Length: 112
Length: 115
Image (cartoon, rainbow over all chains, first blue to last red; front, side):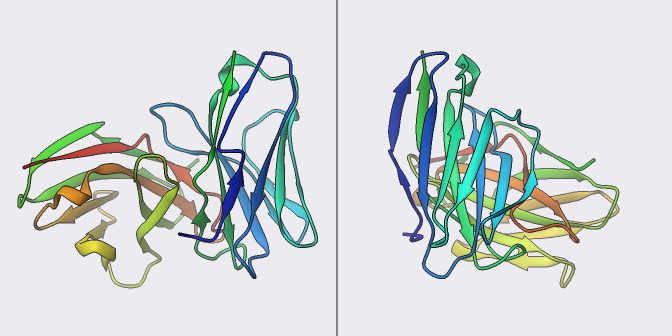
C-alpha cells in the first residue's frame, strides 16, 4: 500500500465526452504527477503539479488538464475524449519535485 | 532527447535461474535511471535507482542493476528467480536537473517464472 488512492478504478465513456479522474496523495506529499499507460506500453508523463501549480507537462494536447487542491489531492480532466485515450491513468505523489514517486493503482478508462 | 529501450518484451526463466532484464538509455546529459515493477492491477513500485553514486545499485527483493556509461546500459539482474517475481518491469530515465516526477519509461518487459 502506497497511501495513494485513485478513483474510480474503472470507467467507461463514449467518444466526445468529458471525464474527471481523482487522486488522493499520500499524507504530507505536496507533488503529484500523472501518467498515461496504454495497453502494452510504458507509462507516459502527462504533467506534474507542485503546491497547486503546474510544474511541467509532457506531449499531451490542451484537452488534458489538471488541478491540485490545497490538501494536495488532484484531478485529471480530459475533454472531447478520443478512442486513443483508452488507457490506465496513474497518479503518483511525492514529498517534493525530486523525490521518490509513490504510485496509485490507477484508473482504467475505456472510450467506446 | 532522452529515451530508454528495453530489449525483449517477454522474458521467461525457470525458478531459481538468473534473471537478466536489459535496458539501454539515450541521454545528452548524465541521467538518473530507475527500475520499476508493476504487478497485475497495481501501480508501479520502485525497485532501485541510480543517481551517480555507486555504479552497482542494490534494490529491493534481491534485485540489482549496474550503470555502464560506456555501454549506455542499466541492466537489471537477480541471481535466483522466485515465482513471486513474475510481473512487468519498466526501466525509466530522467535528467539530473529535472524533477523526479518527469520520468521517461521504456516499453516494459514481462517476466514469467516457470516452476
